[in-house]
Structure formats: C-alpha cells, structure tokens
Length: 355
Image (cartoon, rainbow, N blue to C red; front, side, top):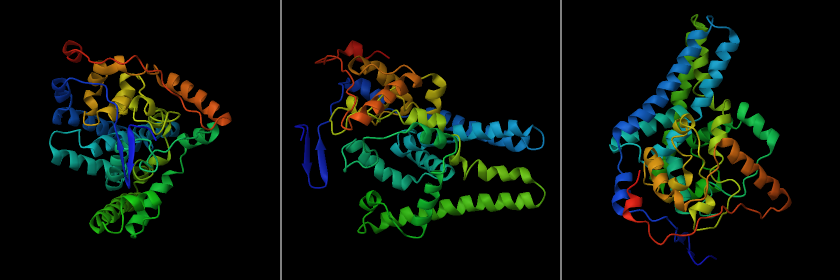
C-alpha cells in the first residue's frame, strides 16, 4: 500500500497532494455568492422553461419535426441538471445555506436525482476518490463500447433505473450493497429521510403525469409533452452530458493520492462550461472542493502550471480516452498516467495573486 495511504478499519487515511495556494487567495476563492448562484441556476432553469414551453406551444403550430427537435434540445439541456444538482449537494453554490438547500430540493425534484442518497455517496467519493471499496461511486476501470454508448445517448432506457430505485426506496427497500453501506440499519432517521424523499418525488411526478392526462382528456393534447419533458426527460438527449461528464475519471489511475492522476480536466468553450457548471475543471474541483464552481476558472489560472496539460476540447479528450480504452482491451491493467510538470517548492505571492 502507498505510504501516503493508510487503512484503518472502515476508514482510509489518504494524504492527498494539493498544489499549494496562498491562504489569502484561497480564502477569496472559497467565498460564495448568492448572485452568482442565482445567475447560474436561474439561467439554467429559464433555459429549460423556454424550450419546454416552446415545444408545448408548437404542437399544432409548428411542423412535427420542429417540435421533436425542440423536445430533444430540451432533453439535452435537462441532463445538465445533474451538474447543478451535484454542485448544490456540495453546498457551495449560494452563500445563504437556506437558499442552497431549497434550490437543491427543487433541482432534485425536477431531475429525480436523490439528493439524500447522493450526498452520502459523494462525500465518500471526495474523501476516497477512486479507492475502492471506500469509494464505490466511481470504480475503475470504466468500460465503454461504441454502439451501446451511441444507442444510450440517444434513447437511454437506463432512465428506468432511477424510477425503479425511487419505488424501492418509497416501499422501504435498500438493495444495492453500496447503499446498504451508506444507509445502515442503525441509522433509522437517515433511512426515513431517504424513503420519504422518494415518496415525495414519486407523488410529484405522478401528479405531473395525472394532470397532463387530465388536460389532454379535456381537449388539450399538447400537455402530454409535459411529463415527456420532466419525468421521462432522462430517457433521451444525454449525448452532450455524457461527452462532458464521462471525461472526469475514465482511463485514469486509481488508488493514488494525487488528484492530477485520478481526475481529468478538459478545456471547453464557454457554452459547454455554463451547461456543465464548470465541472470541466475536475482536477481543481477535487483538489479544492470548497471552491464554488464559478471560481474554478480563477483557481485554474493560479495552479495550472502544476497541473497536467489538459485536452483542448471534448474531441481531444475523447481521442485520448479512446486510445486508453483500446489499450485496456489488450492490457486490462493499463491506465493513463498524465505527465506532471516538475514540482515547485513554493509559488510566490505575486503568482498566487494573479487571476
């Protein structure tokens, strides 16, 4: 076992390497802003409202293929609720904790992601990144076959899995060993919260479906699109979220105390960065998880001379990943070791203050 990693029963002590950052600079980076949080979350929700409303309005007014295109565009944007949900689970989006929690619950209800489950799992993912079984949220190696991936990003029946999971929780069952570990029987209050949130989620989405059917039955068939754009939106349009989100760890090294080797940052355009809530800066996010997403570009500028050279664009990232996956077919133990720059003992305050 690595000298920087020590096991102690159910706990793993990892001496994570972090690029040094001046304390004053880091304090500023850690500052949260209600305005920045509202701008990001509000614009994202407004974008979904616009595409959803436009599709419903277009029924009977636009050609069918135009309405279908708008619905698919809506599904593409909808999948990035995962990025916002993830950041809100960190509790760093808003300075006001109450506002952060209410927005998290709203995102959780709309997307059907379970924030109580994810908070428990994701906390361990950050504590023990890619050190199985302590982190079972992401376990390497991750395999991707071309045609199954292509099919899933256009029509993803795995969306059924989240409905099934909510039903199991709502009926008081925890099946997966990882979730049994996160919610043991001696934590009944936590289990109660888990089950009750699923019951609320199913009630809300059941109401959406029932209300849409009722409106359709009274002569307004266009409202049948509403559940397609909410409850069932995760079944289609996943392609862009997949291309961005799946770059974060695939093909990299597990069981290492260096985030630069187990996480991947990718440089993308501002539109993708907005949709992805800046999670393309994934090394930076893991290295300093308390930094709000809107400050990650600043953090990157401070420490990038000590980070691996990032792929420039999604296409470049996936060329790298495709090469890794090809090598892993013949050598299952292969992983990509990103070239690291020579270590600097200390970054001077002038460098640290740049933004």
